[in-house]
Image (cartoon, rainbow, N blue to C red; front, side, top):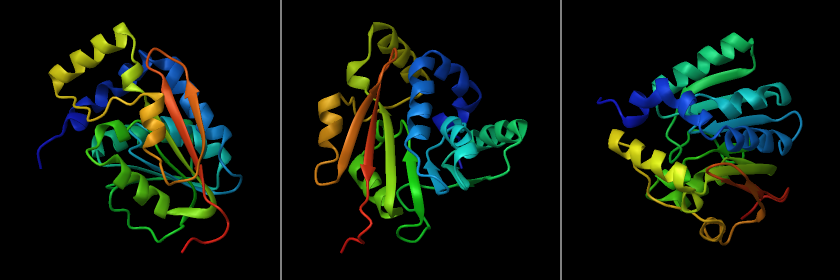
Length: 207
């Protein structure tokens, strides 16, 4: 299997995130603040595990997943260095999760929806595995609101093979969740701001 952009970029991923550290750190903190207590937490497209590692001390169990094995390998090493024992790492495709409906009290996929041809399809699958009474957390870079410096950096990433499918603004990102119970769209400031979408599922099973 050929190496993807994300496989090749794994070693530089944490360094790249430091260029937008205020938003990245604020995003992780925002997710942690909204986690239910004593729950199982699934993160998809976790990259090198920034959010999963931040969440681990506050939940029962973390399932940290990504399609890129080199990304997961770096996340695993960071977790070991921090002595975290309630986290597992698995390669998964967020469009086709193996879990039963309503498995997790909290589900997260960060900074991935703008990279997908069909982000709404991904949201549907993530919503499926969110438990009644649980929360789906979707922080995403608002590429349509990038400042000059971040636009330059994104242009440089494109030379390396980076491809985005959407340049969300607050308005267009909110529209993505039409028909779903979007309870909050928090804006996390930074050089490239993040829109943190929060969807809460009622305790009554749907359908």
